Image 1 (spheres, rainbow, N blue to C red):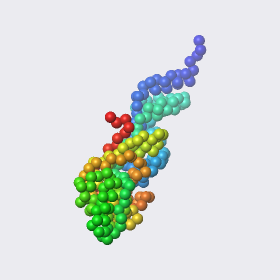
Image 2: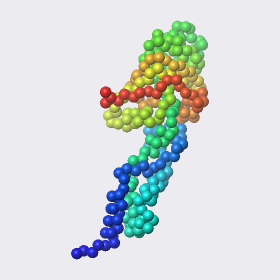
Image 3: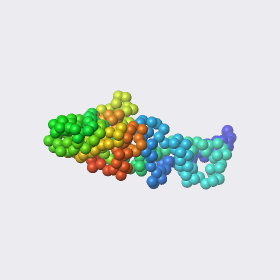
Image 4: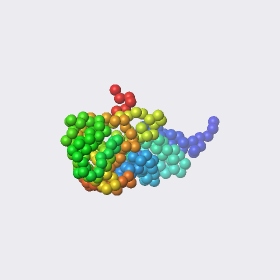
Length: 270
């Protein structure tokens, strides 16, 4: 009969510890109040992969694994497993059960942010030069780009033209959580083939923004705006953006749009 070696005993001990592990662990803990910086949010929506510091994430995961080991083993048992080179197996098994989502948790803790979605229209500069008919025509152009009923929104659209002194691109402006827009952006940008997803706003706030001079105006309109979702038209509106002067730069960080966040309709939606 073959002798049982110390290596066999150590492996059996490691297997026993692994058998006592839970099915899932949250190894990376996000403190309440932790949040993504504006720069990290910009990286998210630019499609950059390295948003979180890899060393920070690895260190936090290591501490999480240690917490699980501390709950399972006393110091002598842990030292014995380490001495016989099987503690790493246990640690690896713990890591495989990690279901933590630090990026998702940080998105949630960051809270709502200001977003813009660019439409296919722009207002001209110096509207004080316009005749009544020119103002009317410009207002109709903006309303048509949003697919709005002009008669329901004529006053708001005329105001938008008249008060956007330097003109600028037409956007829909809203405040919403990061994750819904980010997840849809990833589905469209990184799937092959890309799914055809629609985005819809009800009674949104429209913005004309000149990102060169730092000027603009907003109005609330009535109706539903429904468009094919294009991630290249989506912008997180933050101060000192790499994409020109933002609405936040113009009015400050406390601005809260009146319109609601959008709804996204996926192909499998019933």
